[in-house]
Length: 229
Image (cartoon, rainbow, N blue to C red; front, top):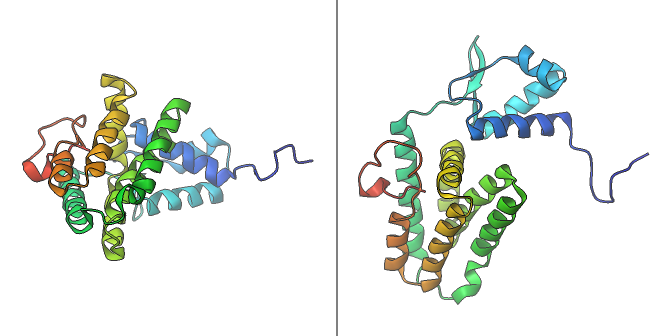
């Protein structure tokens, strides 16, 4: 007998395992470079080898796990320089999108998707769902680039956001711990307000002052990387 409400279904072992491992990676519980020993994970989640390997494949497609020949899987590790370079590329793509899209001919209606993702960030924060907040956060930035209406630009951004998944999540979570849970939301509200100004110069200045990586430690290198996300 199915006790679930209509339209809902029980998540599979693969989905549950993928979500839990992803949460542990994004929260820092599993550190970059840490080996993912299959037998240990199988015992912890009480699952067989097949669904675990499917979960690890899914995480590898997201850029969170990497498979090493004859050494198994481990959490993907990026050097601080690589993280800086990825944020720099994101800033270039966002800046190009702003220059192409603004001023918006269609007015505020074109910002509807950006507003939707910010609202989903708020809801996830209220519900204590860090994973959903992380996903809405990345989608918020993807929606800004999508304003340019350039499919190739969207495709170029997608792998960058996947590789930045952990640094973006870690920055947002540390910000909440240090500055309070609403700090990240307010930071993105300011960026949305800049978009609503319809002024390219105002928006580009807001991107540079956004704080994309301000809670990751180290010194943000140069103006192009100053958007600390």
